[in-house]
Amino acid sequence: MRLEGKSAVITGGARGIGLAIARAFVREGAAVAIADVNREGAEAAAADLKAQGGRAVPIAVDVADPASVSAMVGFAIDAFGRIDILVNNAGVGGKTPFLETSLEEWNKIISINLTGAFLVAQAIAREMARTGGGKIVNIASLSGQRGGHGRAAYGAAKAGLELLTKVMAVELSPYSINVNNIAPGAIETEMAKYAHDEATRAAYNYLIPMNRYGTPEEIADAAVFLCSDESRYVQGHTLNVDGGFRAAGLMFGPGKAVPSR
Image (tube, rainbow, N blue to C red; front, side, top):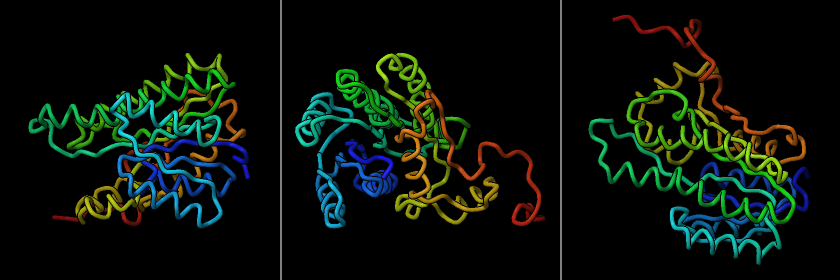
């Protein structure tokens, strides 16, 4: 019960990594607001958590819309009295090659993944500063740390989020607000099951020392740590949860041999 008595807002909480984090937070004693652009999904996720004995409320939100974000914050405060934890998880993917990326796609990905995270974090950090502090975790990405095919917009947004986290950590420290990143690698979400073909999976598995995709629950466990008192002196840090992807260089051994031509 490491989060007992805490209240959390999780954007993009209706499925995937966000829902896994919500389940872990409820398990650790927190009340959670499932904030998602998909109202029905948020309602279903909250109902499932309540059926398991948790305290959860659904909130429909468009993180790229300041008015929608303001309404979300007000709803969460009305429900819980305060906000102790924010997990900025809402985002959209993209894998269009650089030369083919349209301005429309670029703007959409940046507006949700970076501007949306900024709007939500700023609105909630103002409340945290007023009520004595809190924890903010931004879900960044390995794609924001390394060049990857088709990651022009998505990678730029996540790289910006990682730097934004550092600035937030510096400026929000006097308000007792810890701000950190989690950078997932390849994670076995429903989206990955749909979007990753055999060639993509083979490429990822070749580059991951642990030779497998991660699970949403493994990201959730990292989020619990960063939102608990155990991380009280962790500030401005990016925690890669990627099976060793970023750390790896040249690899040999089982499963790492390049097929001969």
